Image (tube, rainbow, N blue to C red; front, side, top):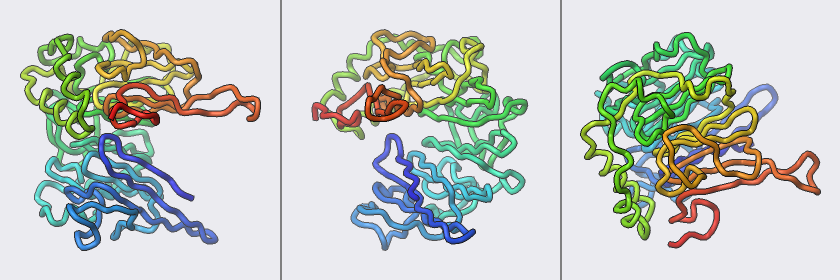
Length: 361
């Protein structure tokens, strides 16, 4: 059996190969691609020029019972069938859960995340600078560093060197989290949705009353960015976006998880945060989007600060989003497949053919 997990916004992939023998299950975590900052978990002697791996290679030092993996921008997480969480890669922001004193030459070595000994982890998530874990009781734990409030630990709390529980969600059972560059969405067992972090462009819906800082004028001229990235690669475009964000003086931040009340009465079944936009799938099949629409990633002509329906002709069953683009696995009618077939629908930025069709490059 192969479980494939691909990294958003990064040319790197990690996957798990599992083999079941009698009653015992063994697994091997494989990685390849960009090995910057120890992200692949491989020894430098095993990698090619520039620290990259050009074919799948086994990540050493992990337990034999890894059941899932998750890749952040430059760090990776591995979850075992016993609820233990391991991490490796970049640790400048303490996203590995081993404090900030770990020497840089140890970053590529997988190590068990500290501070979760009393937590049986059932799911893990990673952004560029933050890691999160859901306990089997529905609790949410976070660690790392984010000036954009992605930790969700309270006003102006920007760092947690070891896992800390998100107390604002203590009464909820969290089943899924999705992380953008600076924002986060958490889905509860009963289908409610909470959002926090960087809220520009309405990517967290209409919860501006919880803001602690002045709102950035997100409706300003974006034509300069659009022109600059129209003929560049994915990496250059991402750099331009990050530079623009770094120049912001007053960021609209939600410091703690807030219920997205505009979705009250609607059961959420899936969420996906892109770089600067969000997708929300509802039980009734409606797909909503919010946030930046520079590349058409919202799937509708107009940008609005609320969560509004995507113009899609099929019923989505699963969603994902990346830098300026969105994906949905949809049910489609088929005379050859009983109950219908599935197809991948994509929209948004296609400079590098990430939509699965020829791009301009």
